[in-house]
Length: 124
View 1 (tube, rainbow, N blue to C red):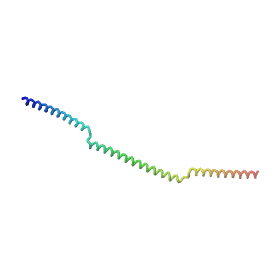
View 2 (view 1 turned 135 degrees about the vertical axis):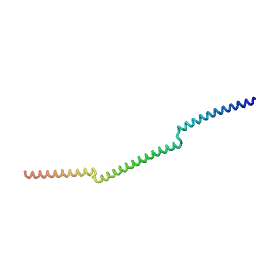
View 3 (view 1 turned 45 degrees about the horizontal axis):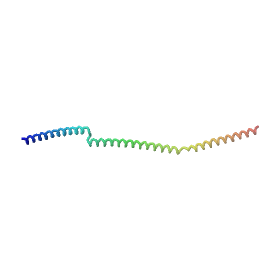
View 4 (view 1 turned 120 degrees about the horizontal axis):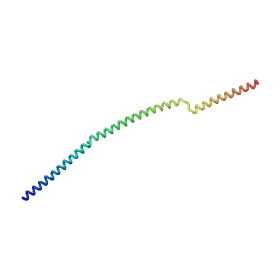
């Protein structure tokens, strides 16, 4: 009697606890599944990072190549300007030349004026 009833109650309590546990486990499994569907796998995340880094590296390589090409053009232009500069007289040299030219001309005109005055005074 009592023993059979007691065993029946304990068995019913175990079945109830097992059912609650099974329900909780099913809910937990469902929650994990939902979360997993929202998260990228490690492989997907790694692939994304590798692509991001690869794109960035390619972009930087292209920009570096463009900068090197621009630098080469500027160096070539500068070299051409330096070579052209060597064929021109410096500004001080040019001023000295003009001063000498004007000075010689002024001296020549002064001498001619003196000669004309002297010649004129001989005729007067």
